[in-house]
Length: 305
Image (cartoon, rainbow, N blue to C red; front, top):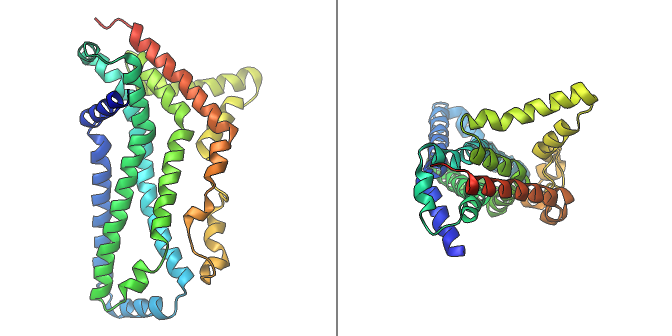
């Protein structure tokens, strides 16, 4: 079973090259943007000398940590946005494309069950895509830290103090990994729904997938004057129960960080136990399981000949 899943996941990576091309492209663009900003800043020699001197000698450790963490969050959000878009299109295309080009007939001739095939696509969407995107975040962050360190050293600054000593880098990476993986699990009901649509619809899977999400709240409001469905969807999209404090603005305005009293560690603001024991996490997993089971049933009994 495990060997089959690993083989099927490798097949997904081979068939859907956007899974690994996307983070490479984003990382390259972010690195080029950082290099362009550094080149632009080099044109202001006097101001730059004052800024480097101030960052080394006047700014507190908390301020330097905040600057580095802000840069990490800014680059990470680009990857997370790309991950959300990539996951939607991957799920909607994964079972639809093989029926459209009739390659499903070939895959059905192999000793692999429909359940194994659909589950491999589910695991790819929930775990493999986030892991690959996290790898892209880490590599991009590391490359940009090295590039910035070289630039700072060339300008006479202490890269060890300004860059590498300015924040808990590993902790922030672990926090990003935890958030991205938990987000995949939290959004699993949508992933299961997209797979069901991909297995069922004969055309325009994107429209078919999002039409109920738009139409059902409208009908509910017209008929019952309630917003239960819309509220449930919105809460699932906004309220990831892994954070101890969702107020990001307050997080950065906390004077403790500014004076370096505590480490500016994103990992300290996560509660993985809370996420794993939250009832809505398990409700979402059950809903995802129901949608996935339906997708397996549709794929197994639909005649594509």
